[in-house]
Image (cartoon, rainbow, N blue to C red; front, top):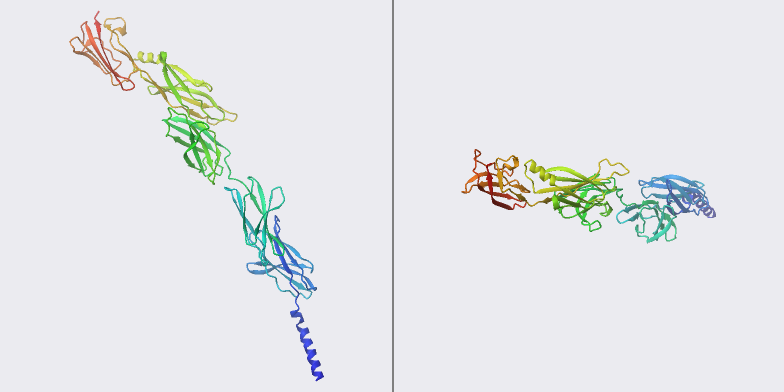
Length: 504
């Protein structure tokens, strides 16, 4: 009986010793955190744990889960070793890690539950000027107590700017300065106050690029409209341009046309909903960024409003406003006349003189001498020429005024007698001398004392030479004339009277 008990004891001990190498595995380490080192280059993860309680542990094996496969990345020696840094390189998503310990017999502990790093991403809202931070949840602890948001500017150190609960994974930072650079990272806190940080991100608080220049280079009148020319920076981040108009330089500018940005460098438009003969208009161009905000204005430019009026002694007085606003100013003003639809430059004014007087007596005499109709309408315009600056201008700007016209009332004179035998050619014929009438319609006729018509013409330059039917000379006696003509307002004028015909 005693032998049997002793055998059972020995057998039990043997079985126990046989199974000792399979069930006495080392304790696993306590995985504390897998933390991205902010601003590390290349991006690195700092893995921390508490050492295994098994005294025969020789080290730890670090695993990474890649595409659902647990792969060994390194072995760390020493039981008291409690951290490891691993270079991730291009960090574009959260990564998972696990640990085991191993003893001097190379038996491994149970593998730890995975810890998943925090991946931080962001979006910067250029329009509202805030950054939106979004991150993945830290996994590995039972729960996350809170997240801390850290930020620094380009020259400063990190400071905590906010704290959110552990169930939040986003934050909007609206306390930003324009044209600055900021760095962020997120820090997770466990209930035991363990910490794990995310990657860092860099944010530049840049606005949409405004134009380096916007230039209103021309406001020129043509055919009762104003032709506008704008030179714009086609490298700016602009969605559209707004052409604006006001009735004074500092007035209330209203948008009259919207032009989409197509990377053009010159914009040409015409404004025809205006009164170029009575008003001065001021124009500018504004650029609009993708947020819908105006981020730049040009200089303004105005049309030249020319006024013309008649004065004594066949003088025409012209006056106009100063053209604005070329960068280098106006070089001079050229003055043009339009008589009988023929244009001609008549003079040049310096850039500080805005009036001019023109006398047309020479023209009236010229018309009479050449026996051509003297018009009642005389028109003028002024052209501003841009001044050359320090930088040569390929094409000088030019801006024309409206066409301003003056009208003369008809001037009528007729002799009371003529002599067909006179030695002076002008006294040998009979005709009215009329200035400033419409060339057509016109009627001039002569009647004898019996009321018989002896001469008739519709040509204002044709005279009666004293002949009847252009064959024989009419008798010396009194005759009656009849003249009908029209002025510039189409008003009819009729003149009648008597005159005497001398034969010798």
